[in-house]
Amino acid sequence: MPIDYDKLKNWPFAPVEQSYSVNDTILYALGLGVGSAPLAAEDLRFTFEEAEGFAALPFMAVVLGTPGFWVRDPESGITWQKVLHGEQGVEWHGTVPVAGTVIARNRVAEIIDKGEKGALLYIERDITDKATGARIATTTSTTFARADGGFGGPSGPLKAVHQIPDRAPDKIIDTPTLPQAALIYRLSGDPNPLHASPEVAVQAGFKAPILHGLCSFGVAGVAVLRECCASDPARLQNFGLRFSAPVYPGEVITTEIWQDGKDISFRARVDDRVVLNNGYARTL
Image 1 (cartoon, helix red, strand yellow):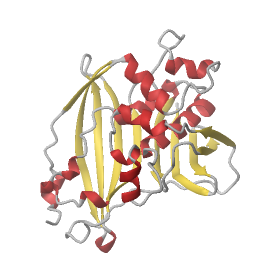
Image 2 (image 1 turned 90 degrees about the vertical axis):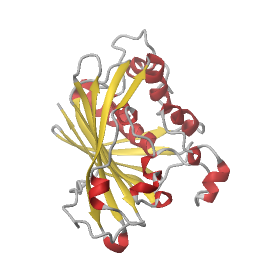
Image 3 (image 1 turned 60 degrees about the vertical axis):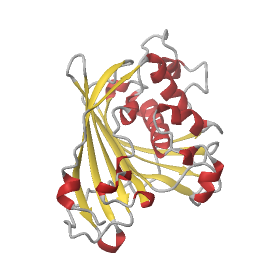
């Protein structure tokens, strides 16, 4: 069944209510490898509830209020076995609470028909604090439905791609990931067996379970937060990137950063392959 543009554009997402605890906040940070240097005070503030200035990592917004793997619904018209997570971004309207209950409202902002190349689904999520009604963050993501183009939808406009400066990076940060990183990170809300089961990973064409793209996203985010914001979540306004290659748990993610005033460009490599690209952040 091909995509029905109007039906998918108006997909009836129910509001998602999610409560989380301080332990969940710490578990998310540990899943990104934060705390691997136990004497680093800037890391301890995200992994020890009694630390001075204890705070949630801002990137935790991407795991709050998710609608689940909704494209598996046959009514969506999407070939879910062929979808890829292409891009992820987040804009903060305030700091992420260390614990609480949030209400998230998801919507399909647009669907781009790329013909034989597939389709792009632009998804937006607004996250608010249930107790206060305050807006916390807006997340944006692009799902690449590789098998579902040619349904007669609009061919644009496409999202602009941030270009990395044509000069050597100002900062280079190496972040080793734990061999068990995917097994920890999946406890923050993505139980896809691709990240845990060797059998499923091989069936999907990988040599072993791969790290979640949003885990790599967070690893690069922590590098930017440390180097450009002195580990202060309140100083980060937005953050986004493209996923370009998988990462295996245990590999070293090298984040390259270019800083031009409040504008930050970045990408990440594992050895010679770029795994995250076209990264952009802005500080306050």
